[in-house]
Amino acid sequence: WAETVYRGARMTASDPADAYRTLSCIQGFDSFKLTRRSSADEIQRAFAAQRLIWHPDKNPGDAVARETYATMQRAHAILMDPEQRRLHDEQLAAIPLSVPSAAAAAPSAEASKAAARQLPPDWLGPAPRSARPFAYVDSTPQPSTPAALAGVRRGDALVRIGEAAHLRDVQGVLEGQRLLPVPALVIEASGGFVKKWIVPHSWDPDTPGSLLGCQLADSCPADLAEMHPAMADARERAAEARARRLRSEGGEEGE
Image (tube, rainbow, N blue to C red; front, side):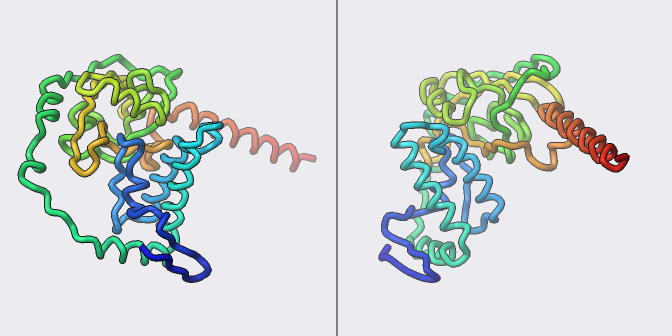
């Protein structure tokens, strides 16, 4: 679009054409599906996931990561500023929507192969206290996605996907094991430690690089944090910190 200036801010042709999609695509595997109806909290959580992957402090000397992070920052800034977001939404509304063809809507040959190779989950017993998740499933995966077919649920704490133990490594693992079952070690909100088999495949014609199809975040969903077994250590640390603070305050009053 042409450069537009307002309230001292400036939008230029170098800005993301679709800031929602920019923040939605987490290295092609984690689609937040942000839309013009998304709340500020949903946008913040998507940006937090991107920051975990692309922040320059986590990628020293990586020019691609630095440039990508700058793009994410700009998309976030646009969507968090009411006036910039209004202008951005007007630009998107002016773009004609494409109607998906019947062929695009039908299950792909790749999806059919993936379904045939899907394995059932393996119960490994109670969750070990030593397990440290690197991400949490923030919302229920959409039907027919690789995550949904694997039995991934909202609240699952991901300890490892294949050899990946960090968000930035997941896409490479999925691409390298495309159409092959990849073990995901998961702590379920119910307390179980489960191996869920993800068969990476393209499931969304609009984002063909997306091979997982679930929304991930670096923190446990707020409504599950008080009971999730993966948060037990964090709850104990918080309780100990409160106890120390109370003892300290009691000592000061005694003086």
